[in-house]
Image (tube, rainbow, N blue to C red; front, side, top):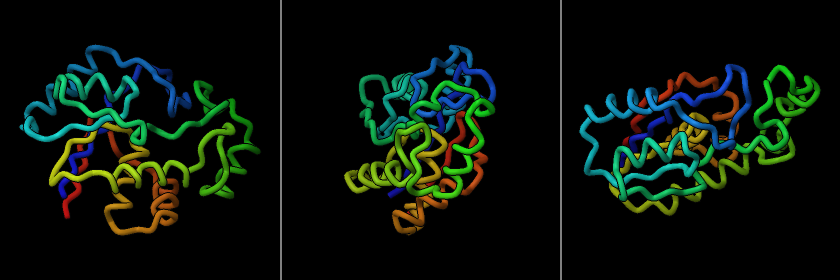
Length: 177
């Protein structure tokens, strides 16, 4: 299976804001920029899957109007009470507690990294196509890449959580068997 993983366009949020599962808007100019770059890659014939959050959904619909399968399992991690707060305003003790137990701690009282890995893994298990275009989030892409590499669920979750990402907005990561 070949997966073309596309990170959503840059959302319209203040720098340093925790926005995880929040449905934040995307400026039209940014959406158009990413769409134009992807259109040159000639990925038109692939089935398209996307996170239902608008920063992914709008791009996916522009790429494959009417042919997108939205799947909540592709959404970014839900940070609960931390959502839409500056990272700098989140108590240091809470962040330290999360880093001390990346797999099980629930930032903001919501999901933990293992929960996210389980739902992303379930999506992959259900995927029955030779190739697909998936519009999602940096955290989801890191998990998909770790799972694709053969890591166990726990290993994939830890790898995704520990590895700083260098996935730019609108970047494409290709995973091939």
